[in-house]
Image (cartoon, rainbow, N blue to C red; front, side, top):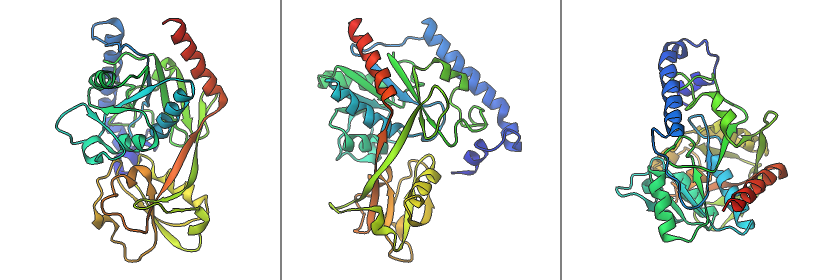
Length: 329
């Protein structure tokens, strides 16, 4: 976490946050007005010919959207649907958009999170800064009857049928100020308008709790798998270039591992030199980090496989919405 992010999750009275507060007010006002312009029709929101479910958040940085998108795709498939996925492809350097993503795609071109989603689902996935264009290309090339949009809560040019907002249960909304004074992309009041709030960790009344279950440890290059017990007799390097590295570090300590922390910026672009540690301890990271290390990973490079677990009440809420959409054609 960089210095500014540390300030975001401290008290509102921090001098730098106070100094930046007026810029945050402008950011918040702009985001509120922009949404109202779309709601009133002053700005056009395009409706695709199939329902669109949005998975997003109101804060900058990771909250656990990717595991939820994977879970949601698997849930929709169990309902007999043929879902497709669209995403921004954050950080992707492709020259032409939209781009179709597979598990073999280069995360440098299409972004790291879409590659993780492609590795864990069988659904077609397209990325583009313009999610409407990504959705159109998806429907041109594949016979999908519903679309899940990853990280599109503020992409109002795309009409949505169901909004899911993901919250980090530990950090919540930080100092509750908008960028750059705080982590918010939209005011906290935006939560009153979404269809469902999913909390990654312990949440409040009215929120659906999501738990990330650690399934085991897998080799980045190769087919090796290990349990957490296999790593308890030695130190391990743990790398995390995600929105909240501390959560990942704490989860591995909770499994009894003696870890050496290596936090990196979110969406970090890794090089082999980043892992030239002075010993040969195992190196463990998230899958989001792992997809960017495939080309140079050695036998002692591993990643943690995770799975989102959500309550039956959330499944019931989704099923109810699907029935409503089907009834209205």
